[in-house]
Image (tube, rainbow, N blue to C red; front, side, top):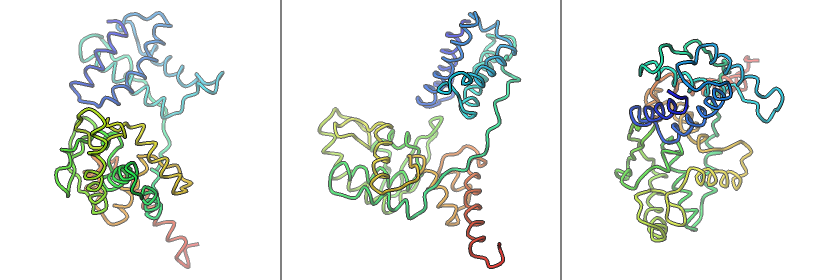
Length: 305
């Protein structure tokens, strides 16, 4: 099997059989395109001929590609992700009987430093949301989008993929996460009110400008709001709120989780709300709140320093 044919078979597998999202499959494709180009440059035209030494050489290539050109340099997280994708490809080929060995079985990605998620304070979130106040249709939509992101902890892809029917009632919303897994998340009062105003005043106006679409969040021309547009909405709101911290859609997700845990929510409840498959992923937020408590203790206790 040629490298290109192997990649196409693997992408069909992860997209159809494993149900990974379009965005994830696209990321796999980009990573594997670099791998197959490297294999082609080394005269490899059959995946059966790829051995552990080849994969080790590719790992070294990724680690050293920026030595001559800093613009080509890859971070440890990028290298780890790329090698993980390559390992998945080779495991798939072995399972399918296309190769006789898993050439990537021994490759090890670089160890990543643990990075704690960056969350805004409650006051910063309130300033961000207040920056979407206004009667302009775009502001009404933006308010509904940001209130929903903070109220539910949704990923930005989950938010823009929402359809009107996913608003089950005024109390809960249905999100579809990674692997097409669905979860039901409650809506707080502020998010409900903002969403109601958008659905009554703005969505019919935007919908009339485009072809019929079930999308919940629409752009001004009536098409489904894109992930890129959602990013721009949040960036503009952050600038108006004069927030110096870097703010992205994921920042609101981190803030949602951190504020719930600081308020006493059980970590497994937060895991369910975030759609994490493992509680270990959610537990990183407990480290954030522990750091906050430690800072408060050090500042407030008379014998802490």
